[in-house]
Structure formats: structure tokens, C-alpha cells
Length: 77
Image (cartoon, rainbow, N blue to C red; front, side, top):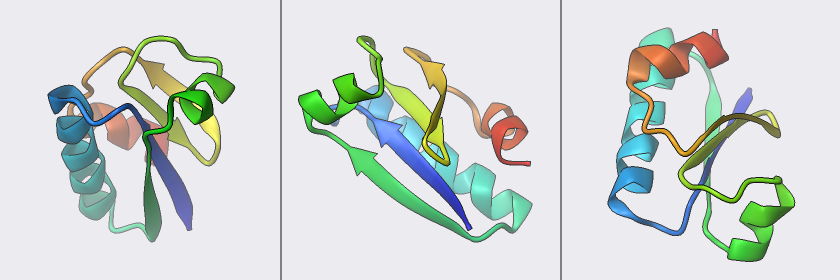
């Protein structure tokens, strides 16, 4: 099971990134857990200062970008 974490305070881009991450995981047919990390201190613990961020299995793979589902698939595949 892959762990997908959306790092952001809940802005529109963070919400869209959440939707895109779900779409990517479902298109690949993988088991996943999606977690939204909204606490600023928790986000900063990942070492990022610009949101939205995307982490897969605890590793930050994107910062400050709204990735499309096909871009996210590259990190999940």
C-alpha cells in the first residue's frame, strides 16, 4: 500500500492536488492511503516552505506545483 500525503493548508491548489492524486492512484489500480497534512509545523517538518507539496511513502516528490494525474502516476508507478 502506497501512502500519499498532500502537504498544504487547504487552499484551492491543495484541494485540486488531492483530487488529482486520487485520480492517479485509481487509474493505476493501486492500494493507497491518502492523508492531508494541514498543520503548518507538520508541513515544515517535511522541509518544504511552499505549498502544495506531495509526498509518496514519506518522501517529498513535489513542492509548490499543482501536478496533473499523469504526472503523479510517475511517482506512484
